[in-house]
Image 1: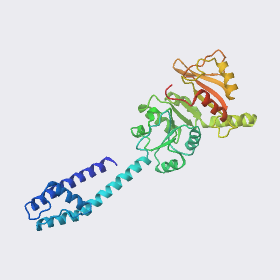
Image 2 (image 1 turned 45 degrees about the vertical axis):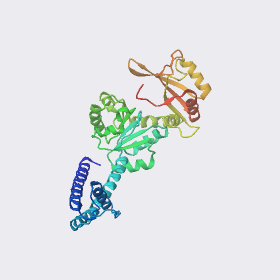
Image 3 (image 1 turned 90 degrees about the vertical axis):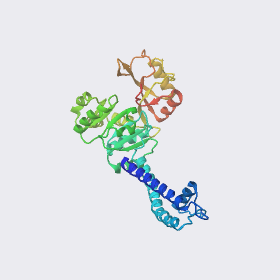
Image 4 (image 1 turned 90 degrees about the horizontal axis):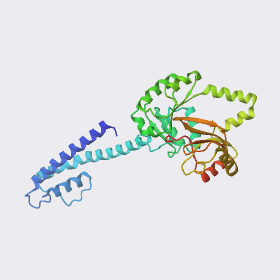
Length: 355
């Protein structure tokens, strides 16, 4: 319930309580001292008011004087309006609470999740792969109809939706945006994305941002604006198309490994973090390579380390490199290999905010 309606309801309730208190007091003055009086104490007066207000009317207390009965008519007639008001307010509050939940105004407890700002067919396609991999997603959209569509097709355990204007940065806190792993800004055009990200970073600076660009020449501009990853749609499409032309089998495999593996015979390239309890921590790269291949049929193809505060990828490095806690391993695996990895090494997939 918004603030003005809440304040109006509260004021109305206070006025009604005050009016009924005065009527009860007046009733006591009229009835006290009368022969066979039934309303002689404050408790009697309150009980009569409540029984009349709720239309129960037990009949155990009632006015006996002429003046008291006239005042009783006021109780009877006003109870109809007050009772209707109370039922209406309860229904309104319940409806508002339900609507607030549907619009995401109650917030979410998601963490290390992906925040998607802007909803369309492309963001839906991206979210299909994210949710298939078990990644939690918070979608922020300014179109009310999007909320119903998203809630119909995706589980609330994985997808949270927030109805908000994109410039309402305070309301975006409901999406727990500060604890997200990355923010995907998916607006209409490159210029709008750039301006929006500059404004967004004023409120949420130390976060990872990713955008897709129609104009690949703007990559450096977006990187200077603080975007972590700027991806050119045309560049990716052209590379894949060229690969299909002169090495189609490589192209087919490339397309498969950059998406989530839905079937057991499909392969997927995954980025996983090495936690403290992982037996790979402290192991040489070459030994980990052979152990992973032997035990899980998983191919280790690279490792990401923090070097001078920056993430640096080592593609198939020499065997003398040691795997350390907090490193990310780049692995090629099928679904069976992924399941074996989880059982054996407790490896968690994806980029985590707290590294």
